[in-house]
Length: 518
Ligand code: NOJ
Image 1 (cartoon, helix red, strand yellow):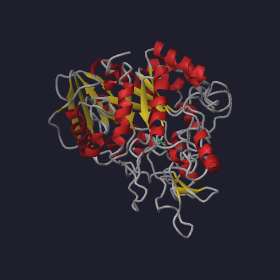
Image 2 (spheres, rainbow, N blue to C red; image 1 turned 90 degrees about the vertical axis):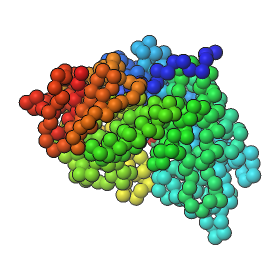
Image 3 (tube, rainbow, N blue to C red; image 1 turned 135 degrees about the vertical axis):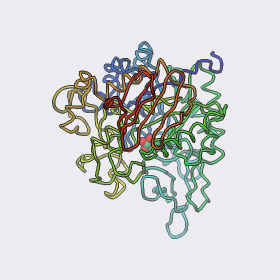
Image 4 (cartoon, rainbow, N blue to C red; image 1 turned 120 degrees about the horizontal axis):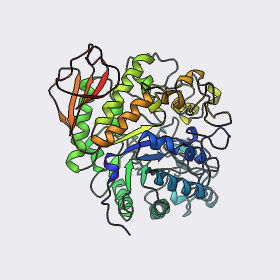
C-alpha cells in the first residue's frame, strides 16, 4: 500500500478529455470506442498530454450520453469490455499517459438493477430507500415544485403512485445519499477502478448530492453534508499512490467552491469561472486573480478549462458579439465570425496554457473545431434538446466525431457512418491536414504543450505593469502577453519570442494575440 500521495503529478498536468463516442471508431459501427482510442494513443502522446479524462464508459441506455449509468463496474458494449479497458489503461501508461474516469454519484439510470428492484419492491421497501421516492401532494401533484436541469418537473410518478426525484432527465433517478448503503456502494466502485489502475476520478455534478426535500425553493445545490462524502472518497484515493479527485461544480460562490478543496477533500476542481468570462482583458484578469486567491492560499492547484462536452466550442463562442458563456447561447442561427473566433481561441489557448496549475483540453479543441450548429433536428440526441421543446439546440454540436484524415466524411473516424454527421468543410481541419501545416491550431497546441511541460505547470504568476487591455505576467523563466487592445503593441525589448498565437506584424504583437517570451 502506498503512502498518502507524494506523487502529485496532477498539480500541473495537461489533461485531454476524450468523449469516447466521438473520438475514434475501431469497429465501424459509427460510434467511437476503446479500440479506436487505443489506435490513436500515439497521437495523444505526440500531442504532449499527461493524462486522458474519459467521459462515462459504463453500460448505459445513453439517455444522457452515458451520464445515465446502468452498471458502474462494466463497460458499455459499444465501447468494448472490461478486459479491453484494462488493456487500454496499461497501454496508455506505457506511453506515459494516465487515465481519469468519470464517476456519476448523483444519479444512476432507470435501467440500473437497483432502480428496477426499487420499482418492483414498492413503497416503504429498503430498495426504494436507495433513491428519493416520496408520496405526492394532494390533487396528484408531485412532492414539491422543483424543476429539473433538463427542463420539466424534477419528479416522475411511478405506477404505484409514488414519485422519484431526478435533477436531470427522468431516466436518471437521484440516489439517496443519506442511505449508508449508497455511501458504501460508491466506496466499493472507487476501489474497483483504482485497483484497475485508473489515476484519477472526475466527480460528476459533485455539489448536488444532498437535497432537503421539504424545501419549497429550488435549493438543491451545495448542501453542507456533501463534504463528508468527499472526505470518505479522499481517504480511499489516498490509499493509492498518485491518484486524485477532480470535482465538477458549477458554483458562482468561490468561497463555497473552495470548501471542496480543503486538504481532506478533493485535490482539484474544474474552474468554470474563466470559461464563463467574456473576451475582455479586465474580465479575464479578474477571473485569473479570483482563481488564484481561491486556490493558492489553501495549496490547491487551479485548473484552466476552455471547453468541454457541455459548452459551445471556443472558435464559435469567441466569434460571437457576446463572448461570455451562458447556457442560453445554443439557439439556432446565432451570428458568429469564425475568423475572429479562431484568432481569439488561439490567443486564449496560449494564455490558458501559460497559467499556473492544471490544464484541460477537450478533444477537437486542439483542431479548432467549431460548434456544428446545423445538425439535422432528427439526429440530435442531447436530452437538453429532446426536453426543451425545440428552444435549446443542446450540446450535440460540440460532440461531433473527430475528423482524422482524408477529404470527405467520415474523415478516418471509422469505417461506418458516424453517429453525428461531420461538416464537409472539415477536410481542412483533419489531424492529417493540420499535421502538415506549421501554422495550424494543432501545431500551436503541440508546441505550446511541449514548452509548457518544460517551463510551466504548477506554481504561481507575477503580473507585470501593462497598458489597459493587455494581460502580461511572468512565470519562472517565461513571460506571457495577451493583447486584447484594438491595435498592435510593442513587445518588451531584449526578449526572445518563443511562440505566438498569430504572426507578429512588423515586430509588433497584433490584436487578439498571445506571445510567450523569454
Ligand atoms: C455534468 C456532465 O458534464 C453533463 O454532460 C451531464 O449531462 C450532467 N452532469 C448530468 O450527469
